[in-house]
Amino acid sequence: MEFETALVSKARLIDQALDECLPPELAPPGVIHQAMRYSVLSGGKRLRPALVLGAAEAVGGRAENVILAACGIELIHCYSLIHDDLPAMDNDDFRRGRPTNHKVFGEAIAILAGDALLTLGFELLARAGMAAASPAAGLRALVEVAQAAGTEGMVGGQVLDITSQEVGVGAELVEQIHRRKTGALFVASVRTGAILSGASEEQLAALDDYGRAVGLAFQIADDILDVVGEASKLGKPVGGDAQKRKLTYPGVFGLPAARERAKAAAAEAVAALRKFGPEADFLRGAAQFVINREF
Image (cartoon, rainbow, N blue to C red; front, top):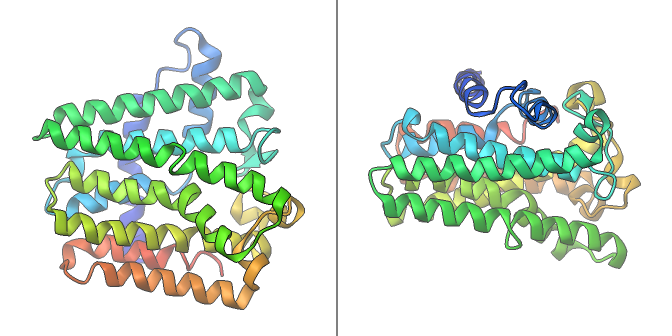
């Protein structure tokens, strides 16, 4: 409960900042700004941007100094959700308990809303870097997020996710998909908060290990919830992965093994923080939180 209270507190700060960073919904052309705000302000636990703040605190920084970067990463995440939901991708009708963006605004506006969020996300990251004590650190963080969002990360993971349905390969590829499509942005989140806060290379190496492990644990938990979760709690139908013949941990290894792998990944994340003190407790709590979501 202590972690969840802290997460809610961080999410409140992030939501306020997001509202201020997004264009007003009536600013012309109004429909694109309405579509952007519809997806970004539709709820969600704000875990990725909260990790930006938590990582900053873990290395002695202040959350308020990286809030702009946290918002940038959340906008990039939201762009990916809009595009993933499109008929040409996952063809999902619901997200966070509401109709997906393209169901409300049409496919063309949904694509443009995603493009606009991606662009604005990098603008916010650039502004955060310009305001950082070290311009070089700001540029480094910007490059790392770009790599995490591109073919080395999210885009590459989505490509593998789509093509793997055709080739039918198994266990080795499923982890590669998860590490790119989901894990890369988790790594970028913690590294961004730390880089902008003056982290040492030793601290960054530990946070790199943490981000990879917690991102993997998160995605395995998502796979499990798609099998055993409740649609009313998830905000979207369950069973979609099996219907689309996606490679998932439960599908490849079975539910018991998937649960054990998720727990092991969470433990790896916590172990990566062994040289940090209580200032990293939020990150430790996040590692347990991601695997305790209704399973």
